[in-house]
Image (cartoon, rainbow, N blue to C red):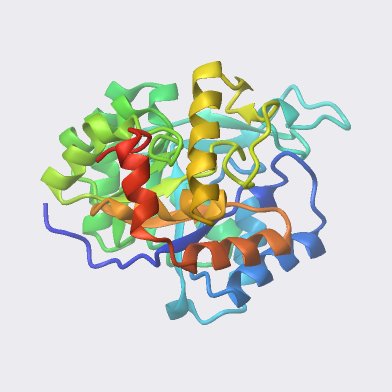
Length: 321
């Protein structure tokens, strides 16, 4: 595989929040978040049809249309098509998927070549932007990873070969699925969500070695582990993915926070910068639903961190050596 020419900024914005993830935002509030990201220097933006049933793509596209196209990198995802929901009732919301938007549409898996191309065209229309730099196949293991490898990834490779996009990959929270996709498909850049963070690094076992071997770049997402690492003083009642934080991880989190405190480093700054210590990690994508969060995260990304902090975390076996 020849490396892609696509260069990713080291900090990106994941636009799920402007798709009304967890709480509704007005158009003006969403615009203010995106404006804060841009004004803070963020030039990589990631979205998906899944985020707010297309709302994230529409809002992000409306904003980015006001910016010079050559000044930012844009990624979205394929694999789920948005189609009318026959079970929609007036007032119904997509809160089962954590998005506060009307559920008048439903997500329909489609890994066929025609489905992949339809997804791209529909994303281009929602975004109002023709050139998408990077496409990820979104959570294929939740549907059928074998089918993805047989149909979806070859379809993405064809789209890349035609020059429609510069790079292709997979976006997932499941390390085994990511590692298999890297080994068996011709991918440029992958998005690892929550599996290579300061708190836990299951992707270090197979994903990172596979990427090193294949020359595949990594974008680290969900680096705050559902918000657990988003503040310097962790909370025991914090949410961990879809449930309660396990005791073992809580104990680990407390120890990591203590080390950061001893070195005078805010825990979120260490969380943002940790993945970038791996050679194959090109970018870290952070979310945020308030302008202040974007400004703060940008400052954290640039904060000098002493080598002694990483050395102590390694010595305590809290991060890989």
